[in-house]
Image (cartoon, rainbow, N blue to C red; front, side):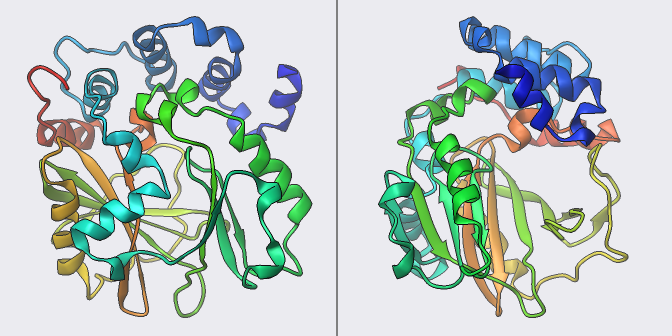
Length: 308
């Protein structure tokens, strides 16, 4: 029942009327009757509080919506598939940057957990946010995590975001080696690339204990612009990684030939690992506190003239 889903939704999200409306739109079965264009325009109005301009888009968030509706390259589904993308990335930059895969399965029931290491990461291949981190099998709630992941496997993420490439990805589960920096935790280095040129880097950390995001240019100059609903909890920003130049060079190789890709990496023990490729950050609904960055990133993003 929809009412049961709402009860389970976080109190923080429900305190925001826009989040309530977007949740209802995503979960209402009747929303599937809407065309991609109408759904996207309605969701943009709800999320961003303004009408979506597709005739002459200027903002980064507007141009991402345009790409969602017009740029449909066949390789996008492969790029978003968390299993298939590994072979693609290995061909372009090398197998040494790939997080080792422990196994891949069509269902949760197929997994023999006795053969898995004590620590691992279990991911859905076909959506965004469908994962479980196991740091200790003795403490990991297999029943609850299985229930959650099996529910994810039944879900076609396309209907929530209308990113068409998700519609054609086979739902599977993949287990990867668990990565952690010295002292615990791990940082995501998310490189925003435009026509093969890295322009900005978002660094995410403190996940599970508050969540931190810092935004830098490629010279590691801190950009004091944060998205709404994201709070800085660390007292000082992360130091410039020693592998920054290599990180940027890898991003160039992976994003060449595309109007915009966000390429994610981890750095552990001075070694770079590929994380994932994201076509539309936050599905194009990032709510910037300062619209100047939204506009600036919109300038960086040059749309194809005729779509794809």
